[in-house]
Image (tube, rainbow, N blue to C red):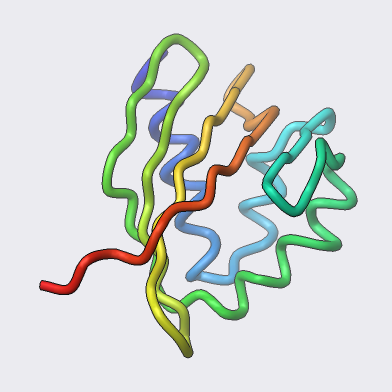
Length: 114
């Protein structure tokens, strides 16, 4: 199960720099919820309305660490924006049946130079 969860997450996160909304939508469960410091448990429709447009600003996204336990995972990733500085975030991801059901984002800091 761990490899299936990891593969689902890797495929989903790769959609952002690729601007591949169709694949991303296929990986997101109908009962999906998203929480971040700016979003309080929003549903799937609101996530795609409010958050997905940020994909246009992403030049690269690299998963630096991925820890899977059962159907849940912690992901630390680095984003390079098309314009502006890079940043890191950590996300707690819950999956079920090969789909992402919930994401909680914890904003990180800028990567250290070097």
